[in-house]
Image (cartoon, rainbow, N blue to C red; front, side, top):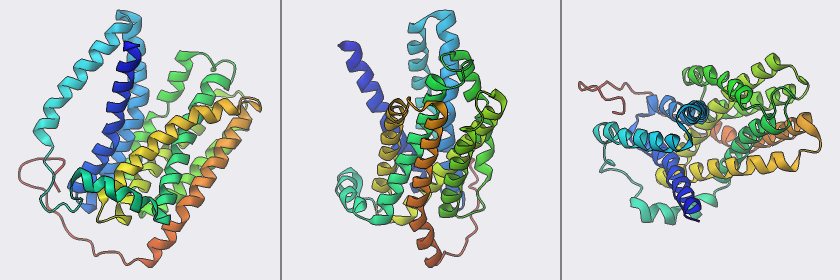
Length: 308
């Protein structure tokens, strides 16, 4: 009972990080670097899911299961030092109006068709991401399914994609979102025909993770642009959509174990196609909206990676 309560509190606290971090980025990072910053944040969250699993497995094997919790707590405590040192308070000109106004703005944001479609596309993206890796773990090729070391190695093989994706910022956010959804759907559909071949499957997962890492910040950047007077609330809803999608992923895989690994991948590809269709209205809206002239932003004399 106590353990379940502690786990629930931990999950609730962790769930608050993503919307807080994304809201901070959209408020403090200048428009010229905001897309790259959002990509780095989302890529870091995706990479942590792999890196920390590998680390936890190594610590558990050498020091025991409880050591994982103690070391994790120490790392989180140490992270308070750079957070306190680097992060800045909310700007005085912030138009979000505080926590209460953010909550009251959420129903109004959800009634906006384009934003609602983007939130649903985020649910589709994250449910597809989690569903795919769940499928690899429980219904994948015989030499991978159930083998924790092989699964972690397959996940770690996709980490280079998360390093390269922040450089892909030339296209506007709605265009990046639609193209990334299309690439993710294509790679997952191709993976359904690879059978038990490990190397081609690893390549397909590499491309899939790159597409997800490109789509996630592109969607949140589009959400931010669509709600200039309620950015905090809009981005918080995006973070909520991420966790809803991640929670639905295992359910999707569990409901489709009958058709096997290939059938699950085809269903995941269909979900991603749906996500691309949901993002299309924002692409059409972007074409009819005049873009602001680019401005030159100088770095401050004091080195601060979060300065705008």
